[in-house]
Length: 215
Image (cartoon, rainbow, N blue to C red; front, side, top):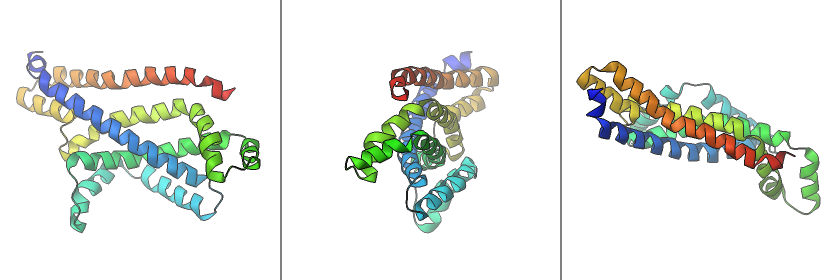
């Protein structure tokens, strides 16, 4: 345990980077995923096809390969992203494909009569989605969105492969210096739980607060 005690600042630094990486990636995933989810149910025929192509491409290719493309591939076309932002982009876009499917399912669970009622009151299609459908849809999809967010938090560990100094990367550094494999990586696992367990609790609390939307 001395290896862990002597490297607490490095582990906490990695935890902070992991938290920042997860938070920014989640914001990107929610924004893109909601947009693509709306495309999936749009009344214009070509838009659902574009949304489906986006989802199938990013959902069915490995996150690690996508991350390598963003970090190692973009310089070949004259664009270079720092490791941290390459990881945010890769994780956010990858996760957005899963968010899009959850959002689509939530929208389709809302009865068509509510949309028609909103349109009869003079709201446009986009206004109906914004003010009537999406608030109810998000209230219904909190649990699956929570699962996606927790999976995203764990997927941030892949950022260590492009030298992002996250929790896993710093754990690997400590292990390379001390060879205290079990104490170091058990501590790393515990610190990931510090992120994911409160997320699960938060999702449960939020679901209870929004339960009125589903009645």
